[in-house]
Length: 459
Image (cartoon, rainbow, N blue to C red):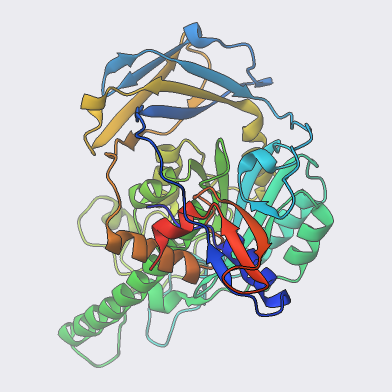
């Protein structure tokens, strides 16, 4: 069962609060004749196609080849999104009717981008602690710089781009939900506090060398320090994954590809885990390393062992002394798994942000129908090719062919509670209701018609 649309529930609650204490009825559905149900399983793949001149717009079905676990698939659907927003007027809702259905939106945006400012996974405190060896990487003030670059981009954003901005500290916060108003976005970002919430020494400590003690004592201190860091990193990972799950549920009802512009740094989990969460919302991950081009530590302890010994594998590298800054491998993996792109070791963060949003102007959607026998709940590796090999492609590496199963009562209850408690509206369940005043069973009652979704999620 997908999450219940909390925004609609909030609108109804507010409406009830304004009325003089009426009784509320839920209209019963009239008896229905038996119906025939037909199920199909459509797999849709967002593919970004660019060349050195920009988006490639003239491709057809015959130009693409899609392989599902090595088997060629018949492409039944192809559409291209090349940066133009539609402005057709939305049909009006009947009187006293409320809905979260997408057909009542005024227009389709040029692009849909979620910006996540990540205070939790950007670290502060590069200086070593007493008796601690100097860390290899300096990453203070990463989010401060990224915030400035984001504001530079917002000043020049296309009015057809729909952007939402969230902040991640010890929880996910809604800074500004989807809007095309760049003045509103600028006002929100300019007031945002970019202070990092995780200390470097609590996440990735280096080794300690206490004077006058044996190596065994120093090793025991290192082991305890690392054990505490593992606990802190596990907590960071759990909070982050919960936030990504909420974001995926929030955008699930928005059609087409969505981009996650994630201004972050030190990620303590695998890219594959992130990809599995984002796939449910058709989200492509675009992690931007807010640290930019990381400088190495300017001071190395005199007793530091030669770095070549580490590279040659002769000895183990101390805690906190990694050849690649922590988080970069995760960024690259999650971007490749979801069809996005990772921007790392680059100080031009403004151009990176612009490239993320502009990818919406170069996206094809390919669709093929999966036979019922192939819906096995397993991961299906995807390969997309084009008959012009010089064109680079970006697309998800695969998908999970989940079976259609009815939600249990416990699953429905859990989904409802998660939607109510979550920081973002969960609008994946379509809802259209009509409110009518009636005099039965009591005067000034309200009759609510069309709440099948609410009845299915009742706790």
